[in-house]
Image 1 (cartoon, one colour):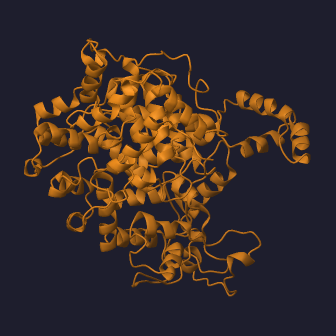
Image 2 (cartoon, one colour):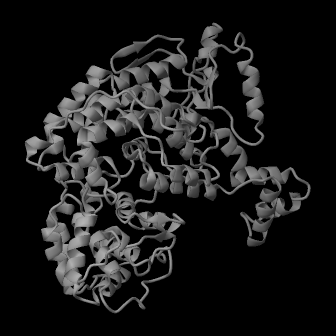
Image 3 (cartoon, helix red, strand yellow):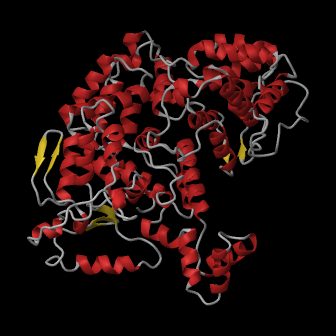
Amino acid sequence: MRIKTSLPIGLLAIAFLLSGCGSPTRTSKDQEVQPRGVPPIHMPWQASGLTERQAAAHLLGRFTFGARPGDVDRVVTMGLNAWMEEQLRGLPENPLLMHLLDSLPSVSLSNAEIAARYPTRAFIKKEMRADPRYTREIAYADSTGGEKREFRPLIRQYMEEHAYRPESELVEDLRAQKLFRAVLSTNQLQEVLTDFWTNHFNVSVTNARARPFVQTFERDAIRPNEFGKFRTMLEATARHPAMLYYLNNAESVAEEGTVTTVSYHRGFVPRYPARANSERKGKTGLNENYARELMELHTLGVDGGYTQTDVTEVARAFTGWTVYPLGPSDKQREQIDRILSDPRRHPGFVRQGDFLFRAGQHDARPKQILGESFPPGGGIEEGERVLDMLANYPSTATFISRELAARFVADTPSVNLVNHLSAVFMRTGGDLQAIIIAMVESPEFWSNAALREKIKSPFELVVSSLRALNATIANPRGMINWVGRMGEPLYACVPPTGYPDRGSAWINTGSILNRMNFGLRLAIGEISGVQYDPVSLNGGYEPESTEAALRIYADLLLPGRDVTETIRLLTPAVHDPKYAARIQEAANAQEAGDEPVPHGGRWNRRAEPSVSLRSIIGLLLGSPEFQRR
């Protein structure tokens, strides 16, 4: 259905697109951050003809989730080099953030505690079948092919009796902590890198088995390793339950009849041949999902020089890499503990935390991977050797360098920059801090072509708006819903590719209306759980006129930028009392038939008839310039 919009809205949307926003060419609770060693940094921003204030705005735009009021001035005062060194070194964390994280029940739990407190619905029903009080009801539910409405209160009753919590609480806490950290953390560089690497090693809450452990995946596999060696992070992700479940490696075992590590070391070779997975009558076998994504998405890249044979061989090298049994009462755990206690009878088994290597399920036949030979009889060291190879492969250096440059410099980074970062990667053994420093010290980062070239994702737009307004968040749900509504539901990217990091993926006419709608709703107070004081942003002074308000708040919300074009573009709109209503009507027409908006139904049509200060702020948040970082 064609969407009819008023002329001013259409013109603003066209201006948005013409401005280049859509161009594809443009385990325990958090502890205080431990300071990291950082060499002196020298950033060549002067060579690009930037003022120090412009350079500070650019630096904040790329390595934070947006400048807060006064941030640009603070960076200028302390010096750009000093600010970057401080972010790399690590700062004491914001006490308010720590308080908010403490309020989220699941953030500090271990994987075992999560599995015990948030069991799956299938596990709960299994327990209820063994409870005489519920046997009849469970049998009835099974006979009818599912859960009837009257059965659900019984499940809730059983969960309350055993202090079980719903899995939905895990996802709510996971998303809330991400929003809180991004808005409030003093270590903004770490938060931006966490967003990058969690997306790079994507695991999704849409996967039922991985869902409970996405929280600890980010906390334990990603966060501690963002300034270390890539190889360390790679193995941390490979061993984590969330990744093992998400890409099915937890079920990947040697094919039936295959020599395993245990049988090899016992001198026993099965006499019957291995059979294809499809012939095994539902039994598990070799699964190539992790091996394929490990090379295509995590390391080498799709053109990294591997073949389908390499995928199969790598999958064989990772057979037996699985999860130590977790859950409230798991008989498999007792069996595994007995095996681990008797290494003579069961050689090669390894448990490290929640990771388990089952030597009896590892394909111990010889392998040939990326031109290197693996002799027969191997065990867990085969997967570790593969990680060593991939982490030090030139294709990996190029792929990771290109992805980092695309995130922090330009959608299509220059070949010179990618080659330079790749060389640093190879020279330092994949030192991620060294790569960040090399990037920020490069001329390409400060070039005029890179300025304002990146478009904010929906999450970046939401967080940067909250930071720019110095807003307080009483309840994060409304803002989280808006991130999803604009196309980026947090931790819910189904394919392992993660969300795109290109402006062309986020900007089209429909998304522009949605972004303008979001800016206005936030500014006038139509999103629950968020508050800000527009007058305090200007030091307690309210502008004397509409023109003055537009000019003053353009400078406040877009510090260090030339706001001339933004003021010219928005001047007709701020003089039109019906402009905000027209934007909402266009957005409502666009979403007709979709799910209701997160809070308060459609736009509040009792809004003030005149153009208020809050409306002017909303127009600025929805402007093309604010969409850039």
